[in-house]
Picture 1 (cartoon, helix red, strand yellow):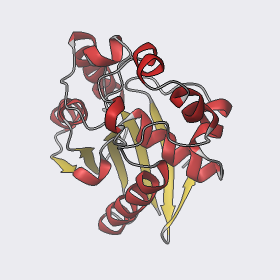
Picture 2: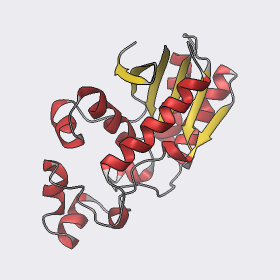
Picture 3: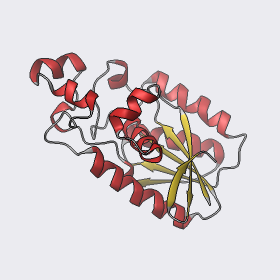
Length: 194
């Protein structure tokens, strides 16, 4: 059984301004760097055997801060990237509502992804499941830290709960920067907790 600790990256200026990031690549802001350092200190108290990260800068910077504190190398994987939000990239909720009337309502209700040019949550989840199983195969019986994004964590929480992403957003609080969540992988099956 592989134990996974999922971490959302530290804050960026785009987070602070509530802009959708998707595959955009902003760096951590000052608060995000501090959040990563504080998380690294708290994780130093537990045994972590490996660190994987999305290849996007905000996740890599968070992972590298943690890796430096724990003495572990970071393995970056493009498969761990945030969902591609297409034409929503860089936009706030207000800008989306103005440019694409009704799209936010569809996104919130789960009646579609909202954007038209990006990636579906179903494709995101399939991509993540493949990546998590590869990581688990490489690290049987280990505890692995995976630094990702709000959307990637949300997709995995939805998967293990058997609901869609919109239902998961209704059932659980928003995913904060540098918050952690635990999953386990046993014979390729991913479930909550450890």
